[in-house]
Length: 235
Image 1 (cartoon, rainbow, N blue to C red):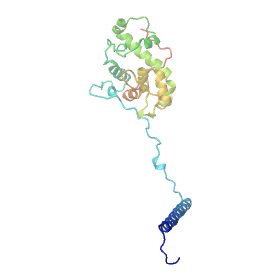
Image 2 (image 1 turned 90 degrees about the horizontal axis):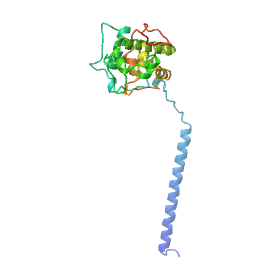
Image 3 (image 1 turned 60 degrees about the vertical axis):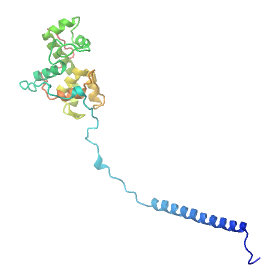
Image 4 (image 1 turned 135 degrees about the vertical axis):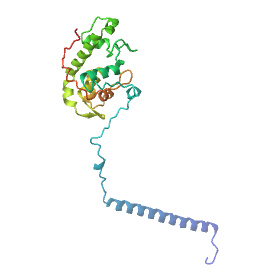
């Protein structure tokens, strides 16, 4: 049969076998290269990244952006002659609350120069009094303000001792800042804020925060206020 031409089937079989051997070679080479790569990588020394220079220690990681009502503007009350005294503190706070108006009532029912609610007034002994009578009695409003400060200073006495001098959410904690924040939010809300490291915040109906009051009214001398658990506004 030598010298005889191959049939079409023979040519097809030869081509098929040639392709089969070629594919096997390619697959085998790929497996060999992959295995070799894994083997080499397993012996490669892994360098550990040093993250020490990226430490977040001491950074202010929690920040509350001020809302529109918290942004200082040209209407911010300042009284250079009162400075950082107790009088300066109470007048600055009164200006923020009501522009210092004894007769004002806001849309939520808070009354007077220091914007007291009925519940707070009852707490310091002002009960069974009409709104009109309270608004006309400036002396009682001043007594109520001091009594509430005095009570809050007693409630927050440990927190004042623990946290004054620290920085929280980018704001230095001061006694006057704590007392101002307690006037805004109540002493228990201020406790939660301080003891949570500033995580548990508070905002009133206008969006004003504890952080803002602590910043805005920090650094005043409130040593004049005597802590008193049973403080009452009595004329």
